[in-house]
Structure formats: C-alpha cells, structure tokens
Amino acid sequence: MPFLPTLSTFFIFLSAVLVAIGWYFVSQKKYKAHKKTMISAAISALLFFIIYLSRTVFVGNTSFGGPDNIKLYYTIFLIFHIILATVGAGFGIITLVLAFKRNIKKHRKIGPVTSIIWFFTAITGVAVYLLLYVIYEGGGTTSMIKAILGI
Image (spheres, rainbow, N blue to C red):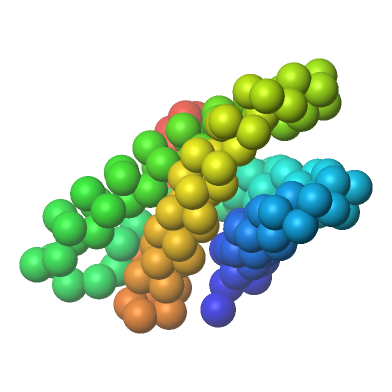
C-alpha cells in the first residue's frame, strides 16, 4: 500500500469518525466535548487535504488501473466523490465559522446536513482509495509540476 494515499485516507476516515463522536456528544448535551471533537475532526480533514494536495502537486494523481469495462463507472463515481468533497468542505467551513461566531441557531440547522455530507464524502473517499490501491493496481502517476512544465 502506498504510504501517502494510505495516510491521507486514514485522516479522512478519522475525521468522519470524529464527526460521529461529536454528534453523539452534542446529543448528550456535552458541548465542550462536542467542540473539542469537532475541532479535532476539522484538523484531521485539514491534514488529509494537506497530504492530498502535496501528493497531487509533487507526486501526481494515480490513474485507474482496473479493467477498462468499469473505468467509466469509476470515473463517474470519482466525479461524484469530488463534488461531495467540495460541497462537504464548503459546508464544513461554514458550520465551523457559525460555531466560532456563536451563531448556534444556524449552526444547529446546518451541522447535521454537513455531517451527513461528510459521512458520504468519507465513505466514497475510502471506496476510491480501495479501488485505486487495494482492489486493483493503480495506473501511472504524473506530478502536476511535471505536467505543467512538460517534463
């Protein structure tokens, strides 16, 4: 298993687990534990993003190495995951900002929606990882820098 994709997938999975724990804490009215857990979830998601972005820029993205007859389905699934991740990240930032600004009424409304989007993001992210590195052998990689510079 490649180190950086495995590490970044661990952090996205951990962020979803922490969101679930944070959701439990708020349901139990343990607001301080909820806050700490959700900040930890956000840090975990940020670590994922830093690792993912660094790997994308310096190492590259791995192309799908599975059978050609399912490549289209993988690509559609990947696009769905990317849209979910982008929407989830946006919702996550808004939800955190609302909490830190103490706009709890709006935070309570958007928080559950954000959590559900994030759960699906994490699940589809793990599925992408499994399809690229565990179930099938990944295809080639090209770094963004090499692609831009034509090296």
